[in-house]
Image 1 (cartoon, rainbow, N blue to C red):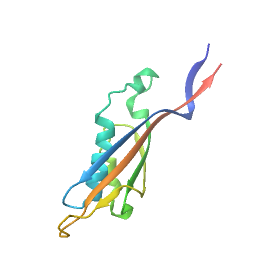
Image 2: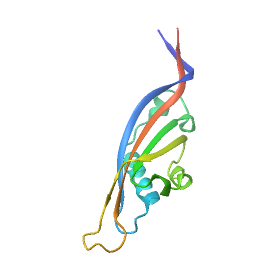
Image 3: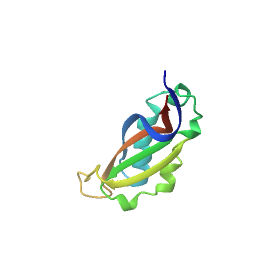
Image 4: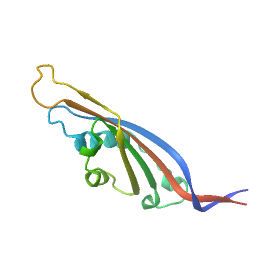
Length: 123
């Protein structure tokens, strides 16, 4: 029988979400909403399942938006109630121009959150 202990990161699950900023063109808010979409549609007790504290979760976060440099990564990190997020923002998502051509585009962000723990299998 194998026992699981701390060491190498092991991927447990990946969640996906989408968020928008309909009128303000706020890339950070769209990214935060995408993360909330991924997080709040699930109630997975992965930490408890493996005998870890929720704070031990390693969160590999990828966010795609049309203008990655306009995302405030510090604000995005505040979305997580626990765990250790590593956030990468890259090209993706979608900007939808306003039909009347006036004002900010609708910003669509996509997000991926991969949860892992530092653990290794020992015999």
